[in-house]
Image 1 (tube, helix red, strand yellow):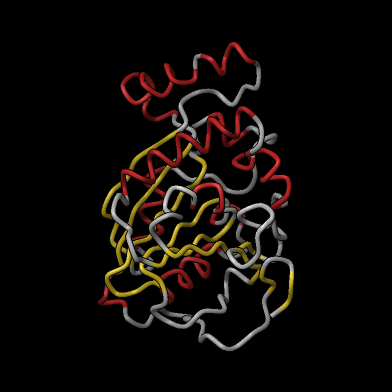
Image 2 (cartoon, one colour; image 1 turned 60 degrees about the vertical axis):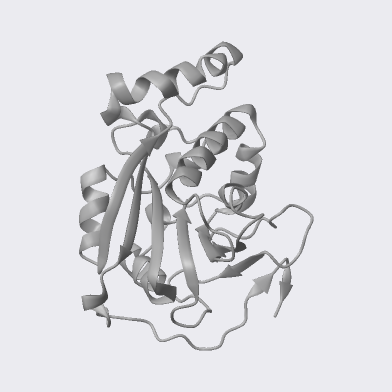
Length: 238
């Protein structure tokens, strides 16, 4: 069952959620350290992670229709919208960067969602996909947004991207601290994050892949043609 966007926003307001987004922001910031003047599209529930680039880049967050919308940033209009993630309301080659988080594992058609990301990404653009690692504890923690839908191993994620005209440029992992909410465990979270990659890299909570467009696949099979459609922006239909 897909998570609700407001439930996801509620999770990120908890101590465990703040730990998770802090780890993710650091990982993502290292993958894309220079985004000044670029356009960044977040698909899924991407708002908390988009904060890492918001001061430099032009960011917009798209929530899939089945998730509903949680305005981002909270209390402001215009930076988040509700749309069909498998038929995005943007022209071809619209974005320099696309971040997909809390989306792929819950999509009715993961391949179509990735094809749409390919379509709206510029030829020299980059995609980051964040998905729950099937071997990690976070994939089974239903109290978090990562405990829903289809988890992926690093190999499965790489093969899926490679089969859809992406070239995987880098892979990494995140969230080695168990998804426990008690205060003593949270105090040890930094230790888990430091030691996890050395002691048990296969049990990370998240699999992360960065990919570029493989331009020999200029017309993906089943490509969706963008057509004008109405979307919800900041809670208002446009």
